[in-house]
Every structure is written in C-alpha cells, then in structure tokens.
Image 1 (cartoon, helix red, strand yellow):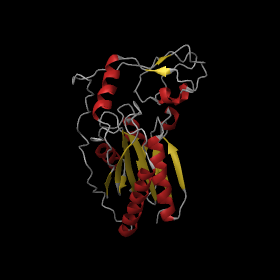
Image 2 (tube, helix red, strand yellow):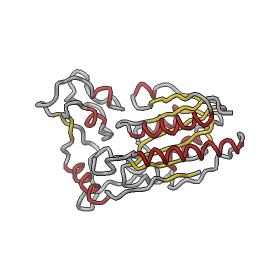
Image 3 (cartoon, one colour):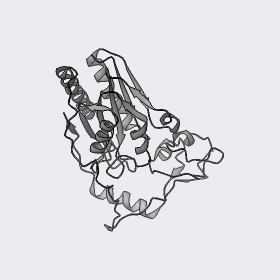
Image 4 (cartoon, one colour):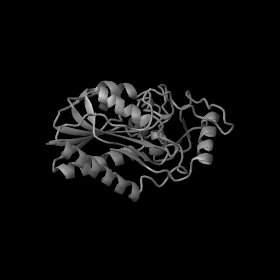
Length: 273
C-alpha cells in the first residue's frame, strides 16, 4: 500500500518540475494518498540526505545535459537520495535533440541508491538555449501522455503487490560518455568556461538571479560577477525580469545555431514500463 508519493526534481528553467509534479499528482490520485513536491534545484535543497520508506513512491525528474545527467549535480543524485526498496519513477526531459543516455543513468543511480524502478519516461521540452527547439512544450498533449504513463505505473505497482523486481529495461547506456556539442562547422564546440554576461543598460541589480543559480555562482553583491562555475542551465537568463542576462561566447552561440538548424522537428516522448 502506497502511503505517500514524493516528487523530486532538478529543474533550473521549470519544465522538468512541471512534468514531475504532474506525474506525482496523478500517482497520488491513483493511490488515494497525499503527495509532496521537493525541488532539488537550489544548492541548499541538496545539502541533506533525503530518505524514503518502502511504502512510499518517489518520482525523480532531471533535465538532460549533453546526453546524460548534469555532471555537477550527479553527485547529489548519487549521495543525497536514499530508498529502502522504495518504488521510484525516473523521468528526464530533453531539449528536442535526444535524451541519449540520461534516462539509463538516472535509473541506474536510483537503483544503486536503494530504489526499485516501476517505470521510466523521457519528455521532449523547450530547450533551455532556444525557444525554436520545442518552444511550445510541454504541451497539453504531453501532459495527457504523462497522465496515461502515471496510470500505467499505478496499475503495474498494484498488480505487483510489492513484488517489483527492479529489472526495468530503458533506452541508453548508463556508462556511456557525454555527448560532445558541435558547432555549425560540425566540429566540437568548446564552451565549458563560458559564463553569462549582464547588460548594464537593463540590469537593476535586483538580485533575483542570485537564488536562481543552481550552483550558487552569482555574486549577490554584484550580479554582473560570476566567480563560480556555470553549468549553462540558463536559469538566470530566462529568470531575469529585465532580460539583462545573455551569453555571447562564439562557440556556445554556434552550438545553439547548429541545434536550431538540425533539431526542430517534433520529437515523440518515450515511455518504459
């Protein structure tokens, strides 16, 4: 008997959160129990270990970064989430290119942490870099598919009556290397050191970008200063109320242009039960 459903999401620009909560709420409705969404995005939210009991169910959502889980957040997924034979539902989103190996990696990480996967899903969503890539997603159709998927998971869990094996086949290779971003010339686009810039004509130094950064890299005393690492999540760019944050790194912009040139077709979501 499922006592409570939890949704955990790392979601710098919000779409992974929307889908994680949709699936979590649907599962809670199916089991007639409460649910709780736990946002795993802010640095402080990832400090403590989160443990879940055998009679709980956990939906875990993450965006895909270069074909896998975000590498700077991966240690937190591995070290801060603990299950006790807890049923889980790994969910990834991707920006209309490919989820590659992110779902396989998330599934493997959760299994290693004591969770038992009942189903897994990958959803195409607006790319953090560009509104030209699935800019209208998640759509009403995507949410309807999320509901159907959650219903399938609930049915599977009920039929298993606590006897899930944890052997869930999902697409991808958990141990595969990261995707190498390409530029318009087809060559690797190297922009690891790129950081957001700030337009002084637009910035009011309101500080709203500071808590948006999932790795705490923006200086609260001077938001134009980014002394820490940047994971290119675009949270500050999309979250700035004045539109003052932007990237001008040539390799980064070439990669974005390559994506816009080659990956605008509608991608189907993937479900594994």
